[in-house]
Amino acid sequence: MEFHGDAICLSGIAGTFLKSQIIGQYYRFWWQITSGGPRGGYRIPTAIIELNAATGEIYIEEKDSVILGSAGHALQLKEELDNPNNLKIVLIETDSDCYYHLKNVIRTRFDTFPVEICEGPIDRNTTNVFLFNLDLDQALREIEKMKLGLSIFFFDPLRMIKWSAIENVARNRISTYYETGTEFIIFLFTSDYFIGRNDFTAFPTHQNEKDWSDEERASVEEADLLFGDQSWRIPILNSDPLANREWHFIWAYKNKLHKWFRYVLPLPFNPKGEQIYHLIVCSNFEAGIRQTRDQYRSLMQIPKYQPDNKLAYRNFKGKHPGISSRYTGKSKPIEWKILWKIIKQEAGIRDMNCSDFSKDEPDPTNRKNALLWLCDHGYLNEVDFETAWSNDIAKYCLNWRVVEERLEIHIPPQLIPISPQNITIMGSSEK
Image 1 (cartoon, rainbow, N blue to C red):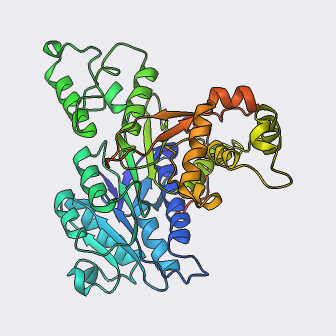
Image 2: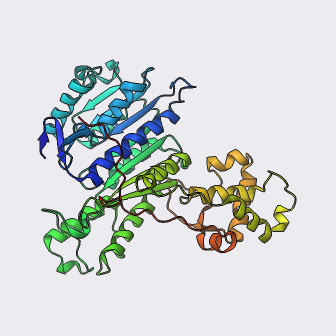
């Protein structure tokens, strides 16, 4: 690691620069809602936990400028808006050099948070900014002593985070079925496993372990730690085209995260060449995922997904007159209301307990029956994802083929990686 003053030196306008901007904007959006907003006086306790905080500043070589890193954005949010002091900022950094510079950044840019208090005993901390120069396991034990409230955990390692760490945090935070109140953002340098980097060797392209080099074996075993098992290997350790193997890799990891989260949104970035990394947003809160996806599309000037509601409902009534005929004017059957919300959400694991469904239909039995009807009529497919809870709640995903054929609603375009060639650069906090 190199430093420019106290900023960590990183390259990539389409990588580090946009990654930091997206995280900073998401923090503000999330906090404005979860804190209760201005009407609620921002009184609801909230927390942003950076598990790999770095220095809080980033030096972008191509722009010869210093911007705020994600930890800096979290501190700026607290300093500018958190008048009631109900937002906790927890910054964890294992590397001693990064931690030294992080403290300098706080002293020079955020001096309303005295470092000596931020590093001190938790029960005497009046700033609600907490600094830890500990390894991840030690830091997580310290975090367990806090009353965090609604929280975001940002895992931002150099390449990947072990599944055991994901499980550790999730198990302590999400105690009931797809409970809201906890979100994860996870950084994953996907392409490192397929094209290598410096002293890290790419995956082998076959399953024969006896013929793997020691370096290839080390890469595979690191991915085993990422997934927590070896289930990912078969569709990925082969000679298929690079893009196919990367897709299967991120899809397998996304499905793994559904153990704890209904909505898992991998945002792809292509900083240069064949490099691909993902910011993976994990949530049980529908609106947050939609806003993040819309923000990502806006960077590339892709219009917000807005399917034609009137056309779709007209087609729905034509296909199902029996269920629609008794509704007139603005009233609609619950089957349609649920289907439309699933279409607008685009992706995720949907079931009778989704909070956006209960706003239209308080009775869980009616919601359950509506989902069964949609499944029986082909609009939904039942899915079998492992979750952290043993229950018999049926889970569904949208059948886009049927939606397109019957309702004339087209599937939204897949998110393509943001690259230097296709971005619309946002304004930045430069120094």
